[in-house]
Length: 168
Image (tube, rainbow, N blue to C red; front, side, top):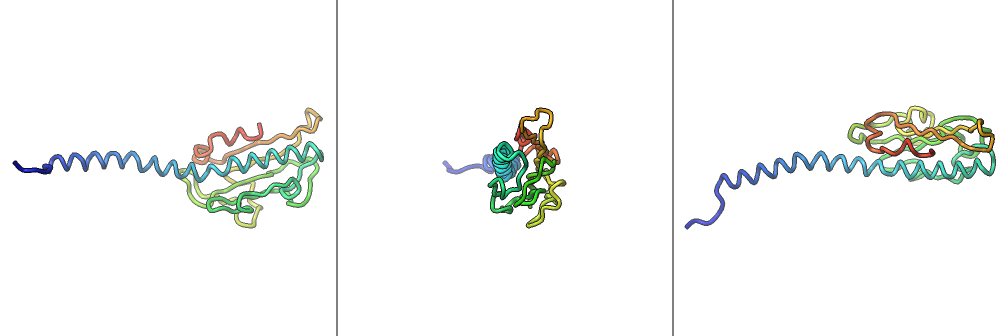
């Protein structure tokens, strides 16, 4: 009696492994992209909380330095650039503007590489993939701040599905 596997048995195993790989590899890349994008939400949430506290005390918006905010990696991480539209060291009396923005430095699945925020350049924050616009809520008159969180594309939105709820 011969011991071992037949060629058919080996081919069946190879086919099964191929099918599993075809399903698992795209899922793996999707999970990697989501994990890279996971730094955006907490960074934006921290900014919103600090801006709310600063506005409640000063009744005006502050740049990142004024409110005590430091972006991850001081504005640049492995995968993202962070920027603001306000001057870091000044306050602005209730002027609306993009207070926080992030752009990915690399393509993340269907979320194309950002072109708005680059290293040490915040001039393109209005075109960033992720941004938060700050404005005073003049309707209530009680020092409230409105935050509008926007994700530029559906590919980026898929990576951070709850981003648009930040500041609400």
